[in-house]
Length: 318
Image (cartoon, rainbow, N blue to C red; front, side, top):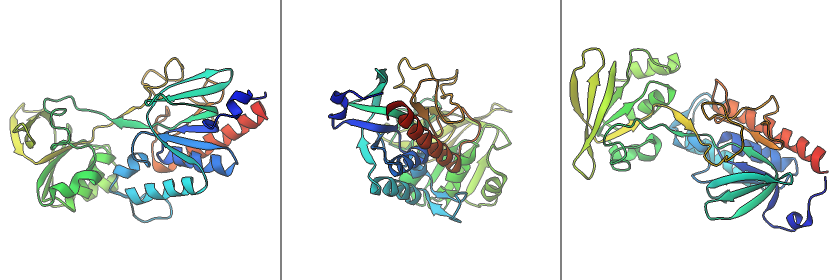
């Protein structure tokens, strides 16, 4: 298929556009650019995805331990040094016209591509308790790496029972004075090695079989949290200066419009080549419908998606 000259002469026309810049998106950008595709990636936040908000990474091959932001910056530098273009913006719509994708961002700019890789990942799930939205940024945070230093030697609370909650509790414990780790049941969903570290850390106090009821403040900032034991129904208040909810994530898919590529939970369905049921539309990373979400699996997804996009473009357009 020959591409219309109106697209070819447009500076906003690309071979490949990637939506998102976590490990999957940046890996796709690296492989796309190395495959000699004119590649761009669009990101509305800090490049690096959730890795940027991770205190330390201990399960990425080649590093016994590396700070999350450092690893994310390494990904970003490698992608841009190869020539992949970073576009800061929020994608609000994507659709196809005569086999070319049109990608609209919130500034009403439209960019065009032969193929698209969705790597938009997930956003933090909210608890929905009273005071959570009111005190966001004033004692409610979803990023320990970003805000831990503000609470040096203070008391904070972490809510959740998965790897993220426990790993961020360990990160916080190196900086703050005390961490209350609040979880609704006895068992954790985290790796056993992480659970053991948490249980052995003297600065972390486990408050189990407990749920949050209210984030309490003075109108300006958080000063305490009301909690309830689910076995006894006993309510109590803990004085804290910041609350970090880490209860899970939801897929970022609000820009997909009429593209019918999601399952009932909003995650995107692909084949073994990371292609959706829409020709030329690929997907990689945490937004995929899958069971395991790790940095290493995201990188694998991004690699496969980019190389599959390269093959698609060669067969479709050249």
